[in-house]
Amino acid sequence: MILRSLECRFLTIALCDAAEPWQLGSQDAATPMMQGIIDLHHDIFFFLILILVFVSRMLVRALWHFNEQTNPIPQRIVHGTTIEIIRTIFPSVIPLFIAIPSFALLYSMDGVLVDPAITIKAIGHQWYRTYEYSDYNSSDEQSLTFDSYTIPEDDPELGQSRLLEVDNRVVVPAKTHLRMIVTPADVPHSWAVPSSGVKCDAVPGRSNLTSISVQREGVYYGQCSEICGTNHAFTPIVVEAVTLKDYADWVSNQLILQTN
Image 1 (cartoon, helix red, strand yellow):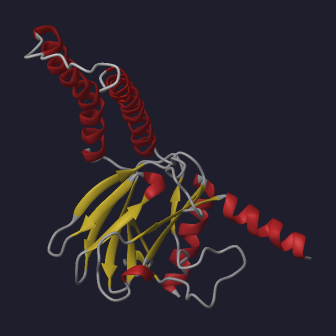
Image 2 (image 1 turned 180 degrees about the vertical axis):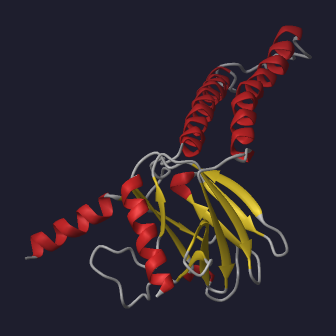
């Protein structure tokens, strides 16, 4: 019984993209945007390692050769034209290799879809969220709308992450272009899901837009990234990506429940 319980817990967590204990790297990418962020991080880290090795070698070499025992009479070097040119040009070239992919990624993250397949509006409250699927209307011409509250700390089910699970998940179809409209109803909030590479602030009085295209099915967790009051830590975000057929069934069921 204990082994089966552990197996169920392991399998449930393995299929969910959430933070892990002692995690050092990023969560697995679920969107091309997040994959670009991870690739850029790895590229920059490569340059950092090269710089670290080069500077460390120069420092160790200087300490080894230019000390009082090895070189009692220090040399008086005023300047060296060659080394000054190298140390000026070479550090200037490195930021160029970093800036070009950085700008390309920033522009792609800032791009908004002109004709998205689905538009979802996330409204931040103290301390829960309201989601509105404006593309679907029930029989009374009301948009598909529901509230999403966090599961209490003392009432989780087996396999659910503590303070990361909600009662109503945001269900989206995989491999579909989505447009997220983020706005608050009271104080500033933020809609952030690390696996999707999205962090969109909700500023009072305005609506911010962002685009998402989840490439694989799964459950992705996020949290509010803007301090919004006492229960700021208790407003998680859960996005569940499913097949297009399952998404259509979910929308139909939600519309029926909302009508009744």
